[in-house]
Length: 313
Image (cartoon, rainbow, N blue to C red; front, side, top):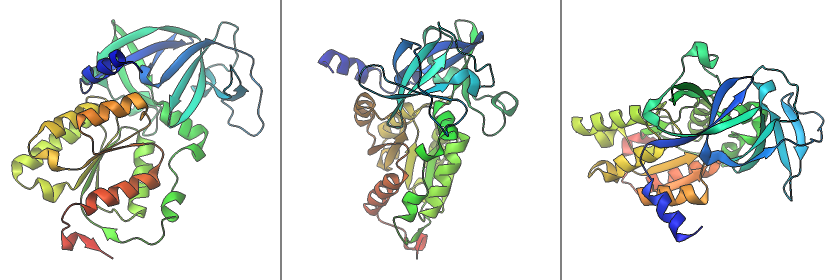
């Protein structure tokens, strides 16, 4: 990465904006965070693999890397029929590279997370839908898909694993309050279950950074911030306010900055790590490393003076 690229990345940190790549499936408009996209390719023949999810077409090898191909139209309930002019969106997140078949790619829009609304249960398919938000780009409504959740449902073994917590052995119970911002309902449940299993029983979950920010401001103004919050964990991609904006606000506040803050995201690439570090994040971890998250929580909280009444065996 050149110095000019680094400067550009730093200047954009914490602006609460997102670049969305728009694409279509059967004429319907969808979006993906550009930060997840490696490249767009013409579709190619795919080698089928046995015993896979119905939406997994198989694998192909463009150059030296073998990629799994997910038929996104089929996963979303459209036709599984493929066409010569289909495209592959090659993505990188959760330390994996996956190609998603789509019909066309429209372009890229830059918008604020404030303008992205969480869909209601009717649109998203209930509590566990695959739409992370609805955005309006150039007068058109775009459904932003939750690709993390899609992959977690197709291949649960690639997502958060409770066995990582089991491998840590017996642990003490810790009642110090942990606040967590995570918009995916599925991943939120997984994180909550894993942290409770690890001994952290006092968890408060938020579906976006804005709700957490309002809670933090209220706790500070009431004078009992450190009784209500011992540590912050935040995703990056969230409607209303993303994790980078939340981190910037917390670490620029004279009181809130004392709280340890961990960014736990599928997007911890080299570029994203630079952003988080400049914004003041204490640690940045890539999903789905839940065991490593617990170890980092242990270390950061050990640096703080514990409340004896909050920790028990």
